[in-house]
Length: 640
Ligand code: MIC
Ligand code: SF4
Image (cartoon, helix red, strand yellow):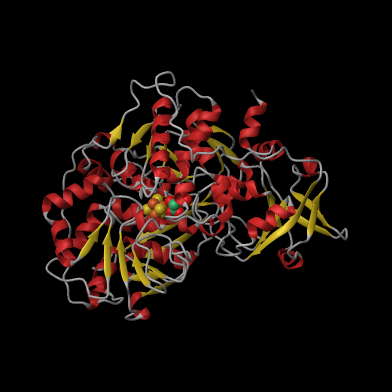
């Protein structure tokens, strides 16, 4: 029986455990990345760990999210991250260089290596044949300190690609199709591994679009083979020496297989307010639009933006549309400027914004009230754009550009424009936005601590009896954007959890913070896939600060479950999903013998009347240690 590519790479990095799906394993981490909105916590934690030099081959700290410097806070965060990066041997990427995932792909990703990033879209580098995983900040800090990461060995879902994409159909439509088939929780506990004859029809940047949005399936990561297209991409980036050919072995067996015939796909759109609410563009018809936003780590590659420039060339953006374009990296922007594509965009009426996350995380460009925005991004959760009642559709760059011209949603095949293939160009290695840590250390570089940077909250050790009151009841697929909103108002406070916590669950229940404080210790009750989306550990730290000690759900998203455990908040799954209905707001729950029960697969909770509820913990031995200590940092302190 042949091995999947996923298990080959995991095997080469295995430090502890057995490579059997469902078993806890520890793997070596070769590279890490952080970005600024999760990074301040990462570097506060790294400092708290008191390490000298990091243990990875390469760690990079990017600044790409909090780029609107409307006050001192974001700039202080940048300075803090830069100082800690220098102290520990981390390469620093200055603001303006571009989006972390695009930059990691262009400059550092290597086939066959492992990458852990404090951002849920870290799997982007799976497009280069890496096992690239998104995680909470604390796990990334630990990976830098120790060079390892523990996870549950995943199932592998094979995605068998055949055929080739037709004009106007692109990689974005492939992943939207997969989301339509599998849903936002279809990838939980699994790696999506792409294989088959259709693979060679996709360039590395196409592949990266697909692996990037694999995050929206809830998958641990997604991976493509490394082949002649990978060599071509690495050569374009002036680093062919990093190429290693990789593929699944003959006869590799997958836990399940999804067939995708690329030739049968058509332009698709994810409709409000979920990336899996996918319909065909033709079926949706000419929806009136107010804004088109092109960019983000999903679709801001050189090829994507060149296609957009070709579509806009000599034409004019419709009067009713504001078109904004944010290139993925400074190299791409420079190339577009050099070859005239930038002028084509501006002449058509596009607004060009800085290379960074920008509107994708609500940092500017929020649509008008009730506005409709077509975006080439990866998430369209309600309110994420910064406008609560905006309607966000996720589409490919081709569909976005054609629609910007038409003034309404349009299938590019219906607008009479011919698309010609985009030629490869050579990118030189550039370092003007990079600060090397060489020559810096803990002695010669003080930590630059601005007044807005507050210590992260710590939990208490798990008591013998854990008593908590139900402080919130929520539906399925609650995203971390809903738990801890992030936009231009709140991102400047990512290093100030006490302040941020006042906005926890703001759009769902503005009374939540006050209710938590009144309850003392709280429990959140949820339906399926609780905590999907962003890796932000603030979605665990803010509730922790407010007193939340348990979350009961029908199921959890992977990264958020890990963040809860890292903070010492106990995530439990209803043994009988019908119990969800039986726990009203204000119900008081007790976990007796909590310290002993935590080791059991099934635990028993009691309410005030003594009625029992069975819940599943299934905590790995390491997870039990963290929960007993009241979180991962507390557990580490015990060893000192
Ligand atoms: C996102 O796309 O939601 C983010 C913003 O990049 C997050 C990280 C964060 O919340 O800071 C992610 O994907 O993990
Ligand atoms: Fe940035 Fe958006 Fe990508 Fe998150 S999804 S890393 S906010 S571009």
